[in-house]
Length: 203
Image (cartoon, rainbow, N blue to C red; front, side, top):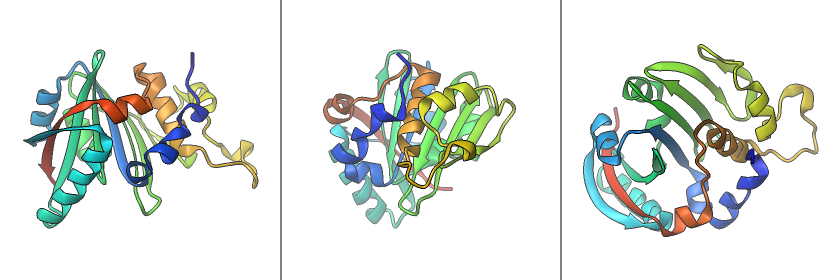
């Protein structure tokens, strides 16, 4: 069944600290250890659940004088899920495009300043990128390939927007990533998973 923004409304209610500033990345057939190596990261202690991950990210942010980002990874089927509280390495083109060599890379982020982004890369090529709140403006080699899926996911285009419509850009980004990967993010996955963790230097 096709996911929609409504399938992800629980994120802000159940995981408000994570929802405030996050980056979710899904990478096809690349193990957590290989992904960490591709990002030039180092191993950190494993943590269970995103509450512990957020705490670790805040702690590392302070201890490293904002020089390192905390990352948590787990395998979901053929994919590695990478979660960055307070980070966006996975959605930054200079990191994601070369790191996506030989694989499919789907990433989206939102930060406390209201900035957000969605990126689909394939083997080093930027297929699609846009701001979830502004889906009419798209870039990449195939900017319109996912238009139907974007509409189904719940993105609000200019000709569909209204002053009374609830903004569902965050949920729509999760739903579109679901469409591209077949990976459904669930509360149980975020709450109960023992994550392989690491950190990487910024810049």
